[in-house]
Image (cartoon, rainbow over all chains, first blue to last red; front, side):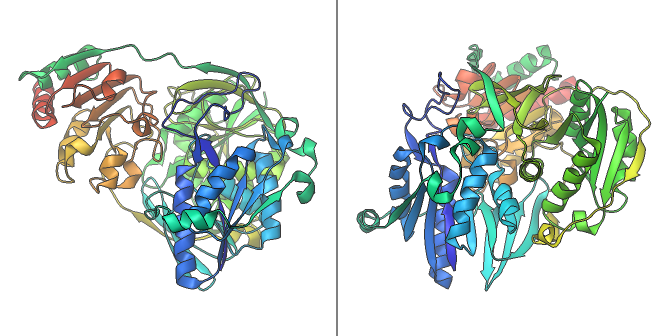
Length: 259
Length: 319
């Protein structure tokens, strides 16, 4: 099975994040950039499927030059190769134009299965799998906490507020996964060394036949007009329980009219 | 006034969800709300009274197996056709997984911008969004096409504005490409009368400090006494104490209730991402240095197994 995993480099969600003062895009230059955590689960799922059914795993990333670091990290887990879509004109692209670029690249990769994380930790927009499926005219099984592959038939458990839905589709399809689906492996030393030699193909907008003004800030379908940092929450009351902590807590809730 | 399409979030069991009433309330600042009900046969009739009570001047019904039996795509097709025929001022959807997914497909179909996770929406279509785990606030606008905006639950207080909506049945024309992902089974895992996590006015969450799955009954008891929903931190979910759909945080749900109670939760950034826009935050933790206390309006440093039962007794006494 030919599997493509979408991997996004994002600023570390454990550190302070901000928007660039000049154009209100995500500040990447000063941030510690890492693989979007949820994508590691997609990579793991791809590797498990390859191990069970054979095939090839390709990492697909759209991002600036610095994203190459995350691509090597992804490859060190075990995928065979990578494609890096990199072009200065992509800076500031919205979800709609990003989906156009990714779908165009996917059109050349002939994937049976496209795996990705359910959301990225920077935007948390959750729309990409369905946007890609819409553009490619293929199925999307999203929010999977379990995925079964039998021949060309895919069955997923899709997490819902009430429980889950069992959803099915035939390949080719896009499947997005939650972090409950597996436990991603750590790259081995051998994996890290091997990743250095794995092929990474670089694609520009010209390679994809997309005009620069269709993407980036010029082609964006939405714009951030104002950014502000939320004022920190004021320090509250902290009491140490000396036998009456529960009652004191309820007294506080009563003054706030919750009880 | 122009129509504003509100895509109804509802379920057979829970009825019309509160976020739908919030969307109808917000829609009235942009135009005249029309509710769009997409579901099985009879869905519109089931929800009509409630939608009318909150100001839906019209209800569009797209019903049947073609809509209900497949994931997302047929719904987006029905809405796209409706947008083309009525030319609404905006389309509002709930900021749930499915609401966002429909919005994504709709944006591609119409080559239109979209904004997700809005907590407020101005009459001119400017949305306010909380970003980076609530650390930043942005104002954004769709710059191509009409505003397609998903609204986060608990963004506003629903206000009734009674109307008597006429129901208009839509012709559902899902193509073969819309029917590639089939829903073969829907399984309810956790029943109960508790409000839904993202919509609840009160959320009581447990973390690693709760210790095991059985002890979560303590969290549930306090939630029930406060009329709230139960949440869990990632550490608690990863340890198998509570199911993943109740996880609050970076890789789970984002909640913004009036009151958030954190029990045995240290307050790692992963968790704060999902709850720090709550109005009032209360924490119980035995570690006085736990970062959750930096957020808490009221914090108790102590053993939750002593503090929580005492609090529960005290609430019962006051009732």
